[in-house]
Image (tube, rainbow, N blue to C red):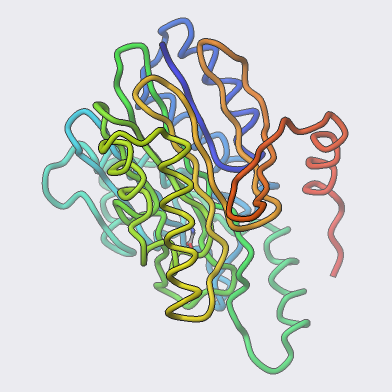
Length: 317
Ligand code: GLY
């Protein structure tokens, strides 16, 4: 039995590719998560992950990534790393260390250099155009742009191992050094092979307030289904923030349980995710919120065709 879930439509091709290998037992959960996320990091048209990710307010691309092994809870994370091609690979390498497994900025870059990870200027020409357009739109003050799509994956393999992993460029126009939920254990990701795993996307500052990925796995541990756990955790955080802070950012999560069942929840209208398992090939689902209840349906072919066209459309200043 195996299963894999990833946030957003951008996970589709990568999940299709690693599914074949998971199915044939060519790779386990670790490699599936790292390979899939690295493929997304390498694709220049996704503007919130890896190469082509949108820069901070100084026009520098700072990336966060993390990996967690649900068998022994080991994890690794890099935050605000610059000029390395695949932050997820660096995070995975760090997860093999008991101490010093979370590194930021220059320290993360030194580790990546020492361990022979590939360097790359991660600022694409497209990202520069997006940046300059944004600067033009914001004549008076540079403010972070709240729309962004982190890739998060949860994988169960044929050996009942569960892992969770993330990669993101975080908020467009963020402050230098700003870190969101994606590299913070329990917030952007969590995995326990005896229970399940969860990963989040949305406004890191708000997702961290609910330690939402840990919360979802805890609810599953207490006996809730994976779908119930997602909805309870997300609605609770959404409602608490509205009550206490009078505002809430975008919050979306996906999860799997130890039997490969999936769950999802969101407080926005355009969330999507991709799921594949030994029982079904990779499919894209569109998620909606109605009266605090999450509904999801398969994306139509038209929607799928339109997605890449929009992402790859010519950009002009
Ligand atoms: N969820 C990604 C971030 O806030 O950085």
